[in-house]
Figure 1 (tube, rainbow, N blue to C red):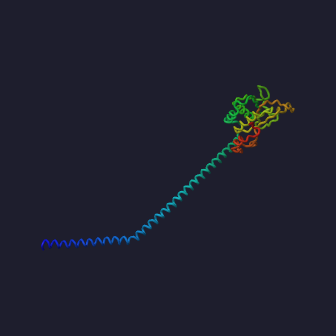
Figure 2 (cartoon, helix red, strand yellow):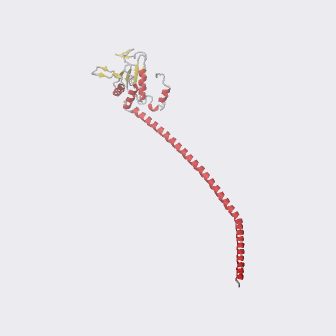
Figure 3 (cartoon, helix red, strand yellow):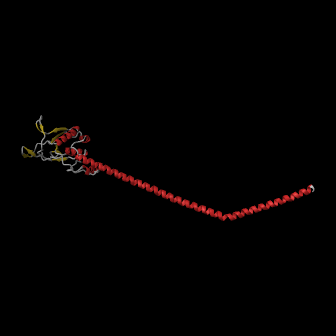
Length: 274
């Protein structure tokens, strides 16, 4: 076989191979299109399922988010109610403490505490001149009278202790013999004046102590040497310190509403000077 024949022989095989390759390429392309056609429904089904699952997950997320918000709101409401309940409980506790303290004070030994003396003296400081102190012979009344005297002296008052007997042997009377109660403490003024009465009643009230105020246009009547007289010689202004009233015989401090002081400031009783 000559070289030309050999070249023609191999060229025929090369052409055949190219034709076979082109045929195989055509089959591959056709197979690809056929595969895409056959796979399309399955791909659509998978995509639809994927989107449905995403939609379901999104809905679940929205529901869970709403539930979480509701839970947070419920927790906040519960915390607010708990705080309100705690505040109410604290107010009730403080009120019980106030009542218990008032009861203890009512049953305690008759005396003025140091802070009460300071409150009274601060309220009347420099506003009381000479004042006359009339205590009974009862030991508790006498001790209480000296505590009142200390408070008034701390305010700059000139306290005159009014006793019978002599200077060397003073005698505490067993009764006042005038138209003044023998129980409790009474502040008295004559000649229609009541500035000192109002001042001291309010000062003692600030210290948590109830005392009585009394004034008259004329002198105070009483009994002198067994006879009733129109003027018993009582000096004015005066403080009468009588026997201790029975516990809770007066309006108890624990029954006073907490806002009573503010109410009285806005609506003072008629005897308080404006």
